[in-house]
Length: 143
Image 1 (cartoon, one colour):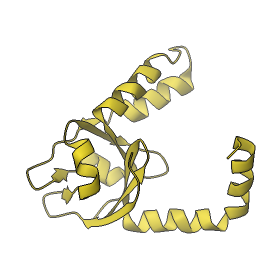
Image 2 (cartoon, rainbow, N blue to C red; image 1 turned 135 degrees about the vertical axis):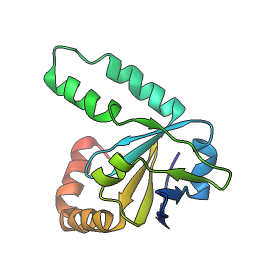
Image 3 (cartoon, one colour; image 1 turned 45 degrees about the horizontal axis):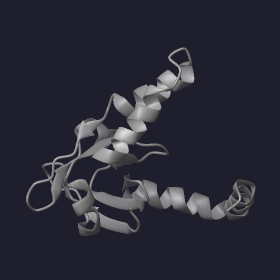
Image 4 (spheres, rainbow, N blue to C red; image 1 turned 90 degrees about the vertical axis):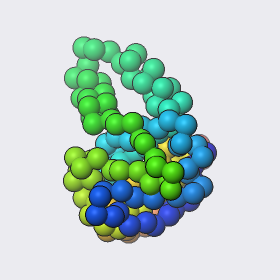
């Protein structure tokens, strides 16, 4: 289970140090891909396999299903960490998430989200402004 928020910097070679609490779960195989809401997702190999199984059951005749599958899979890349726990963020994904230097790793239970620091803080500032709506949504979900 991934939880917590960690701040890091990307180096000149597009490498970033994966936070130590996340490394042990990711070093046995992981996939980085386009996320939602402006971030990237990293899934463990097992979580990616579960998601892939679910995606493969989506109806081929549904454009929404095909589009979602394409968004997640076309940019998916295996994560490779060096012995210092660094990984390279693919250039296309770094551009997509607007990651230039400051990087936020955020644990989201079954995945790690990678954000540009500025986009992360903007996103959460907006969430805080919607606190009442979010509370109502939690109630509707039975949480």
